[in-house]
Length: 336
Image 1 (tube, helix red, strand yellow):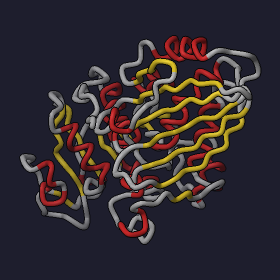
Image 2: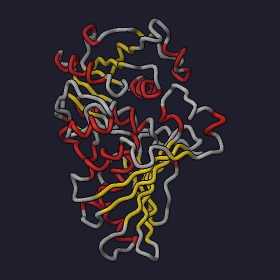
Image 3: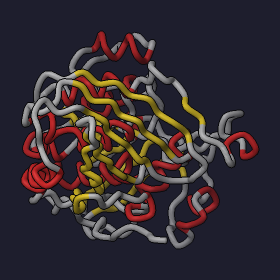
């Protein structure tokens, strides 16, 4: 049995990690840490995990003796934790942004933090780096917005069809985390749509850097908060540099993702829905429509807490430890 720890297990991503790992046939969660809820039953914080016989603990990385650890910790906190785990020979999947970037200067600029302990990490998007993830000791889990945008954009950039992508994304409130804020307060978000960090969101350079691996492309990105709990819809707008039909675009996407266990390419004109992926690790990509001005629209849908966070982390763990990539995550979405 693979012994696993979840550091920072009381948040939404921690709860989702526990949900998937509790039914994993090859994994035992031996530590779920939380300073706030130390010695409290997990089910008191995550009521959907009522049958999970586990208590939160307040353990330092030095005290952990496990095979793999998930660090579901805030940006800036992971960099003080991850190196200690790696030095102990523990494999790590980090869910913060601390190790996602090739260029530390980009991280420091957009996160407004000094990176004290850079390490080599593999970017944890299996659709890009599956073979590298299998050999990695440290995997940097992608951001939620970048996951949907990158997967929607790869075929277009890879084929050299576009030099500019505009990503318009709308996320459920759970993406803001478990701690309430004035923005996520029910009267402020209900019946409302709130654009934020309109040109300055820290996920924009992540999308730019990773799509740039496939070709020269400029990325613009604007996120919106919408009054739903889970999910991210990303609408990509672009103007291809040659005439191309919707059917040809669909063929490109089918070719790119035909062997991918967690990407589903929809038919021309079929639009992804949040409810189709809710609770699952799937990314649905569809629409593929071209208007009379030559604008191509591609839409992706993911669950921000699963494919955008914890589900991807479990898939990365599976790859790192030699298990089937979809182990414990075979379930489809919850519609309606």
